[in-house]
Image 1: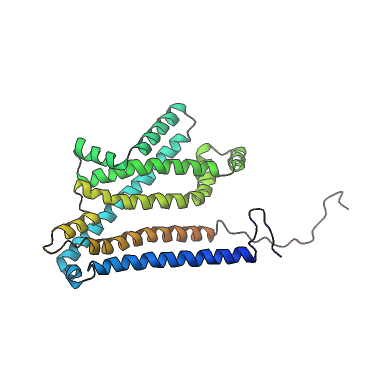
Image 2: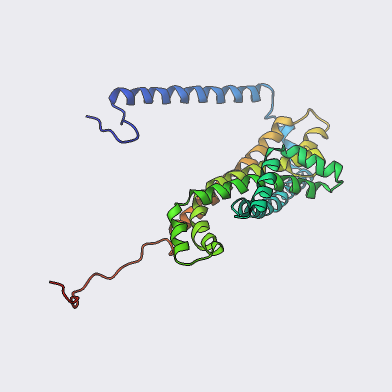
Length: 285
């Protein structure tokens, strides 16, 4: 006999068999697609030693490492500046001063609506800024405006009674935000923050359009400047796992931070000494 919950009904024997069938069919389809993809790679001779041997050359390895370092450099600058800009704009949107709140809202909506590539090109071409600062500025303006909304909604997600209780204790708004609301909101905001940082990491690849020598730009040079048949697929098979690995590392870091927060002494229950017999209050029976 099956049980029910407030959210869903626990599947019965027939439903479990259907789910198992769906899983098997999906697995077969995925394996078939993967096999077809591998067949195309082998059929077009993408795994021949001629196309992979250049990656053994020291010069090409140095070019890839230099491009990876430039990508991480741009990401580091953009992530730090985006978090700072997001915090400032988020605080502005939560401000009680109307002018500051409206100004912050206008900036957030404008930069969030603008395509990041347009901003990068405008800064690089119109303002004549160097490739790295132009790339970082474009990523910062876009991702900072998105993070501002993440911070604002995270603060609003905290129970209203938390702030009211802090105000009742005589705390100022800055103290309420710093010691009460922000620490609780960070846990709710962390997945969205990491997701946006992953977007910033992937968008660093736009730097090759303004001649910034990042990781994708290095792969493009390898694929286009060699004498033999263009090794486009081998370059993609080398670069893509590294991008995926960096994004997965960010996700793992977010999970580690969340677990560390749960184990933090500030969030653990405090042991309370057991009650002991004491003197009764006057009038107690």
